[in-house]
Image 1: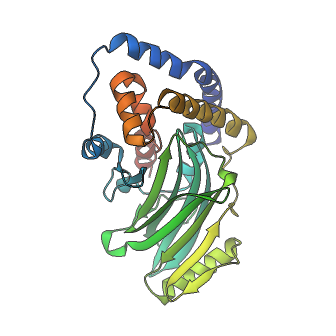
Image 2: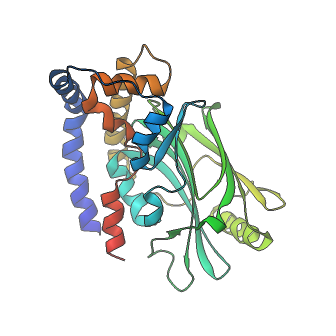
Image 3: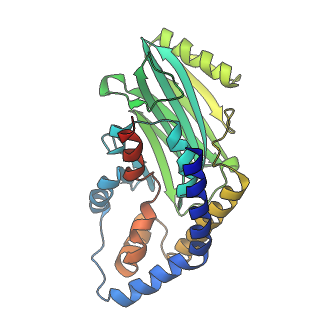
Length: 301
């Protein structure tokens, strides 16, 4: 595993250094040369049809992207290997996994916030597994519909509210396209309604164990602030990788915003890119780990 990470890091270091300075400009020029007839613009429903294979949808009223209830990601669950690999895919994010036992199962409720490629975003994911396996060696399964939890969060950037999300879900997310952020500049105000008192107490106990002290409890609703992670960062979240990937992410965000400066919402910006710079189009949705990554770990388990 360590050798694999080292190899990926070396390849990434070389590749991204090149990409920062050349990739998007090359794609833009190639797009101009190859596509002379602009595509017809999409409405919100049309965009959501194109987003569905990625596992996401667009909320036109809030001008944000979010994960749908039944995306392909739900099949693959979640675990530590994905957090290790995420920075190598230009996702420089703080992660906070909270492990606890409830109803004869191991549970994982994890928080994330930071820069996902060309978007600033935040997530809460809920997963569980059989109780007779080590929590450090498994990929947790996404919870079933009967176990969905009512969750909400507010993401702030230096005291300014970027967005709010609230829904009964297993993977509550939100992403703002073209927004560049350092994870340390983001604060996530989180509330989760657990299934009962037993689950609530197990979750709070694990939060306390990790380091959270300022926790509010109201019936079965637990509220907390996620500003910096207490758990150890993955080995791939180091100064070198952070610097390279964030340079790449910031470059892409700046270029995207410069190209689409005449538009004030993501739908219009995307339509412009889709019509005149289609070579860049799919890069806009690189705010999730690829299915090949998930599949490789699933096969090994």
